[in-house]
Amino acid sequence: MLTLTDTAARVIRDLSAQVPDAPETGVRISSESDGTGSLVLSIAEQPESADRVVESDGARIFLDPQVVDMLDDKSLDADVDEAGGVAFLVTDRPG
Image: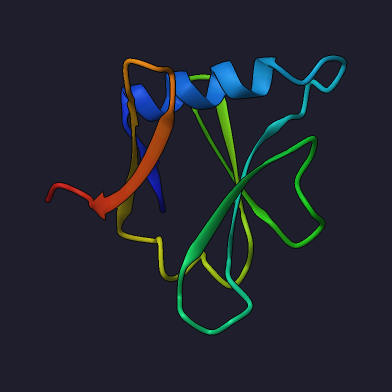
């Protein structure tokens, strides 16, 4: 199952808090439809019916069924630059 670093969980909580009146908000991870295997992260007010929900330290991730196996042994990290820009990084989970 995908895990989140403390930084990723904090960033996701902060992003989710920006959506008023939507307590189920989280970040949805899906794959590009072009077949490249690229991932798309987006803010979602709730999971889609087939999504797997991962919760960690108050952060919610919604995994599209097509990415569940790909991310099973991975960890999601985040980096915030001085300007407040966010970059997410998927890494191998430490063994």
